[in-house]
Length: 434
Length: 110
Image (cartoon, rainbow over all chains, first blue to last red; front, side, top):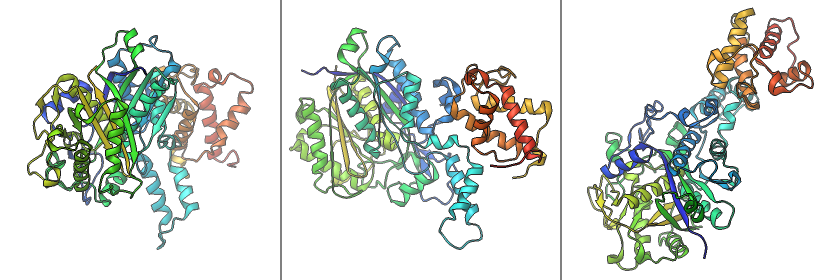
């Protein structure tokens, strides 16, 4: 029999709290992290709201040694490094407790477009200057290159590499084992944790720092998702904008942040008497192989991902007491996910409560699955079900118990967390009381 | 870029370089001395020298071709342990050389 995988540390940087205590309190209270965008001037944007990490409350430098490493990190790398440091501290895994070559990193990351405003500014400035006096949309590349070279600090280029966040986590944590980055958009955090568990199961590592990070609240990120029609435009009520399963839902609220978990081989955790939050019991993933953003109407691939996840853990749907939904708050996702869950459980009376913590946290994209698994673990550990806030008007297409508006005290022994990404990648994790 | 007004001289160049080194390595300015080794004492790595050169360009008001720093180090410190040999004073020397180039006393070849 294969060894179990324990979750022994949790670190989060989210719009509703930095550190697991603050994060869990917000989940219990049903607090929204959304507000008007402060990161840049968004005048004229269709969507002017987001769930930002409060920079007056978060200093990446406090988690980084030497301090100058901070300037080499993109915003998403800073979130990941801070979350990993918190998770490591939370786990109390000391430097002598594990061979550095047996500590791995598995990270969901990699957004769309330029990673930081300064790089975007350099590219845009160069493009504008080099296009001056020309009616053509074509870029004058030699002119662009001259301006770009002159104005861009070379070190900003390194911040754009999607694998660098995981490298920074490794540098800070002296994690010299396998170091992987998964870039499956909204499924990335979930897959990174699942693949991290596999690294332990196949013998490549004893400890894995696993999770996801993202920071796409920049002009290109917000415009991009907005132009795709996926973002809520409820600009006058930011805290009410993310409303999964509500009939009036009009898209997701883009968020940013990171969550990192310490995954640990059972024997390793036991040998050092570690506190265990939960067992990471199973993982399943599939791909729709259908359309780019449309989901299979029958949700078959999503159902199969959940089935594989439960089979991997030796469980059946009847064992599941709570589901943390992907629940983005788009019309299509929530209806399809509801159909998928109905198909998995067969009979309506067998379907457990399924809430969407995105209603509070926003959609953290590549970090979403990790932050949501962290929420699920904390809820199971502390004995409550996190609510779906902003649930006012039922939608017949989403007629499940979504734990509306207030958290519910409940002892769940087994919980499932879903993520479904653009591109059709479906990933599920199941946790079990230790 | 021609930046005669931003060309820095003498002692103020040392002070300017100390400030840049402190900014680049995010260390307190008073920990940066003329004989501080950037790598061994202050924690620099190779890409920090790209940042350093970029910031020197700003105070000298002149583009410094990427290869120039490496060429300077090879010529000035042959066979040395660079982790110890590259000091703030060496960066000042490089900045002086580039400044004089900017002032037209050395050919501004790339």
